[in-house]
Image (cartoon, rainbow over all chains, first blue to last red):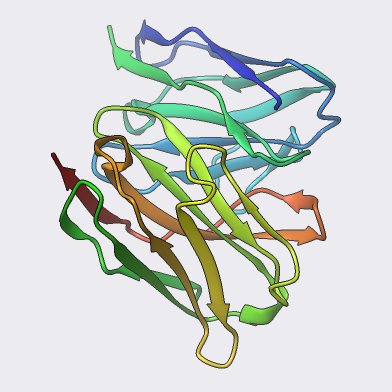
Length: 107
Length: 123
């Protein structure tokens, strides 16, 4: 199975900060990686797929990069509505596997 | 508008069974692989099972293999998860979603998700 290691597990940041979250896959997943945002009590929402393709309707301050085993989600200027938990997911091969999540909190 | 509505969750005793349903609308259901995912209270997301558009390809997480069965009804636009031999560790919110795959190769990860249904397994 492909293990996905996400870091950090939590971070504190201020509105306007640039935030970077990293996922590392234990095997090459090509570009088959997605990023999700989840707010308390809600279903996850897809932000990015194919490592760097922005989901329609998602603000352009979100961006994804990487391929193979290393991936990054960047929020260029954190907004109040961005405080949430973020997950990456590899879908190159079954079983699909998620990173452990990153909780982004207000500093 | 794509809609996925899960139902069937509830409180069940350890060793018991439960059947979850997910009613889909707003898209060509048979064209999509459907999947179940779950989230234990306060924990991260976990993929549970997927079934291809025709039902030919079925996959399970090791944690549920042999205990859970996924199925679909393309005429009724629904996907199901039959859960048996339930354990405390199966307590979670169960979500259904869709993804685009061909056989075992997926091209896009889950996009739309339902609101989830809570399964609580008591010992």
